[in-house]
Image (cartoon, rainbow, N blue to C red; front, side, top):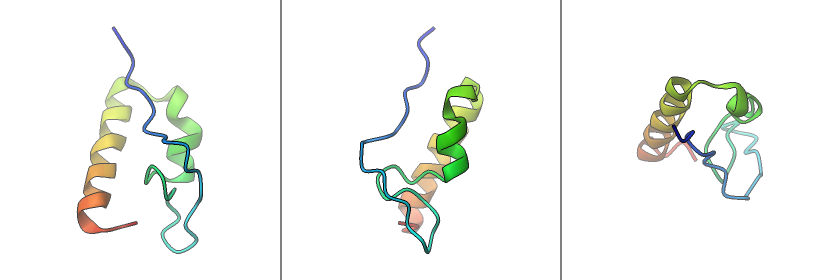
Length: 58
């Protein structure tokens, strides 16, 4: 089974206000723990990124 790839797009700048990465909209914890996350956890992070995009949390 292929693992879900990281949503990192190489724009690695943390926004001081939202505390999210400007490039991938993940928190520093989500970025740091990505390799350790299960597929279910990775799927949940991707869902959360979609929610953040929709709500304009960028």
